[in-house]
Length: 199
Picture (tube, rainbow, N blue to C red):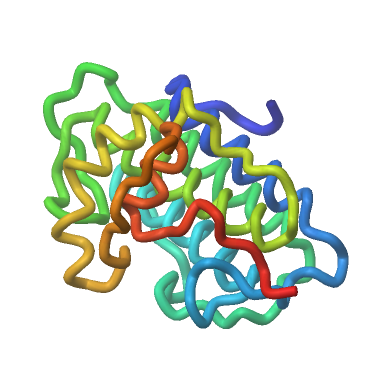
């Protein structure tokens, strides 16, 4: 694992999944389509990094992203790995300062205050699901594991329904027989686990 760690296993694993996904994007792959409609790989990276900065900002009061994560440019960053690492470092450092037993921490997503675990897991959910988006767009193996998906599903059930109204998540897809924890989470978030780029 590279970079600073947060001291929260779920978040550190999600951050590593995002690093792995970004590292797997080929040199000419930043304009590839993704499971996020109308967003290419670069746009998903920008959104994911911006969200990590948003969580860090909520916790520390420091400035958030200097762009709108929900309206990313989609124009390739000069150094995508360094762009991501700067955001993950701030996020991890912010969460490292949070008491694991805190009953309430500020978050950038509704309800804007959560227990420390739920806030951390919401931050991890964002990183992990966008890691999956980037990996499958690039034709790389999914970095989202069943062991990581299980706690993320727990927090997803806490926070996702209100966010659907804002367009942050698509409508849930019906579960299918044989779904593992990853597929169940992806369908709950409105993603098709079998999504692949058009040939």
